[in-house]
Length: 356
Ligand code: HEC
Ligand code: HEC
Image 1 (tube, rainbow, N blue to C red):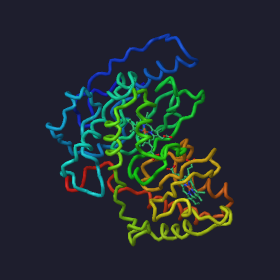
Image 2 (cartoon, helix red, strand yellow):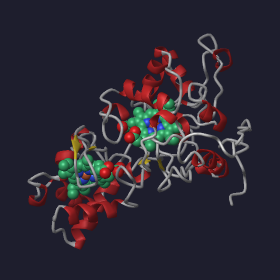
Image 3 (cartoon, rainbow, N blue to C red):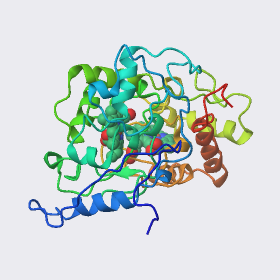
Image 4 (cartoon, rainbow, N blue to C red):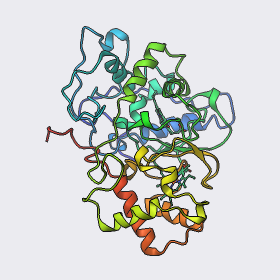
């Protein structure tokens, strides 16, 4: 059993408030009601600070303009320290003044005050599952997680109205570069980021949010940029820094293949367009799904909507088998090395440039 019942300090060693959850042993209600209190209890046991992967992604404290707002005045309780976005709107500088709208968004991203009572009790905010805008790939809530990094968000644990009667954990998506990756949700159910942001709040049992809050949160999320990648040029082509295996893999990636009906990997994951065609396809993984970007993929495993594959190599094996691509061992290795080069992020959880 894990040692600490709840992180007593955040990743910077600052003390966190105790969540003070009471677990009702026999709450009345739906089938599987036992799961919710049990999960809540287990969540407490599995929540050590280390459950957020790696070091703090955005280590520069964000200074709020007190004349604009202060969390206490707004009645917001923060679950994580306010930080400057890791890398935002194409800028590596972390001393730029953040617009008031983004400041408010940064605050809302780190508060459970706009969510339901359960989230408040457990101190869950957007930042909890999307640390630094990325993916909490260690998230593990027994009964709600199939593999670390996934959560059944249509379980009544989050919101009784959203129970779909199935155990259907979804692999958490990174929000880096999210403004390029519409539509939203694994199945692309929302065309607009704003609509998805509102939905995330309501799914996490929050009351209908103030439209101004949805605007601020959406603006903040929209500011998350893909991290720099020295292996890619601005057209999505490999640079001279890439290995020769990755260069061979790039050719395979761009080659139309009979097994895929004349498509290439690049048809659905176009390098020039952040490696997503922003459409739905069925790649025999269960249903029609939104094509995910491949940028940053090294840090967002496991893969596919349900996290069925542990590594990019396994994804390549699966494509080869399902679409009868007839790749040789060497070609699969090259394609994997290419995906690893594309999925690389510079210093994803380190301190912002100029700080170290
Ligand atoms: C319990 C973990 C969890 C929390 C907390 C959480 N999310 Fe998510 N988020 C997910 C998962 C899982 C997905 C992918 C599943 C899906 O949407 O189909 C996702 C997907 C998203 C997406 C879609 C990204 C894309 O490219 O399609 C957005 C936007 C998003 N979340 C925003 C938020 C916001 C805003 C909050 C806070 C109000 C939040 N999330 C809180 C787990 C979480
Ligand atoms: C017809 C469109 C299409 C083609 C062609 C295609 N993909 Fe995909 N790709 C998708 C979709 C849709 C998913 C999401 C599947 C899921 O979530 O279950 C995906 C998922 C992936 C993932 C997992 C990303 C993640 O974060 O989970 C990788 C890696 C990938 N594809 C690589 C490739 C490679 C390599 C090829 C060529 C062999 C290829 N794709 C061809 C549409 C396509």
